Length: 294
Image (cartoon, rainbow, N blue to C red; front, side, top):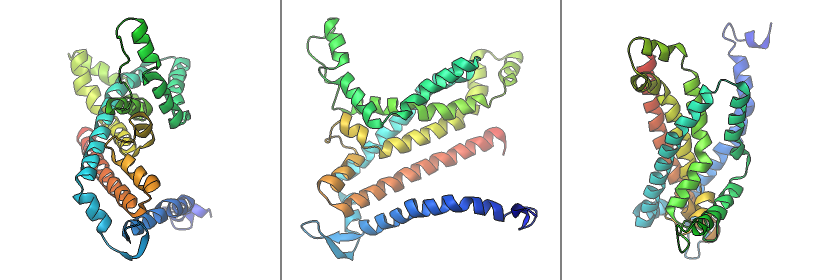
């Protein structure tokens, strides 16, 4: 008798044994640090930011009563949502090209081009944007030599540059789920729609687009979560004065050394981001039930 059969026809023991290593890993490196972070966020500090043996909600009171942190949270969520929307919009033609390419060699090359930026450190990619957007960078040099501008443009150290860098860094995370959704659509389905009298526009909007909404939502959730928690790109591209909560967490943790406040800010951002991602996932599931009927 095999191990999978020891608990009856369902073989319930074997799947749990397979899950044990990953569950132990998550407990050791995710759950335990999360609990320690919660405990740290409840610690009180003195005037010199030294930890006291008492606990309270003073750090959370400071987070939710400070206009600065509330504004930073709102700006962070807005930038993350805008980045997700732009990534999904730009990902659609790229995903369509990946799926429509018939040659296996060309398709492999396109996937390599898409995934290759993910193999490069985010710090290196961010510094590449600094080389492009700096006042003596490539873009300003080209504009000056072509006579389009007389003095360098301020392309760096602003929120627009941060969003552009975000989109470039996170675009593959939106393309891959969308390409999967497009690839799952049977080839005969659009042809059947056109054979029934629907034109290309109506075929796309009424057949193809509804079936790819789950892939768009999956990509948007991933990009939103990554953008909301990123601090390297906005710190290097936008500067430390950008009103984004991850930069505030970085400053409190590593520059001011107010660890309880940094922990409270981190948990606040985590809970809000997880709540929005959970709501988007719920909407995605409802759409799938509506389209697929299950």
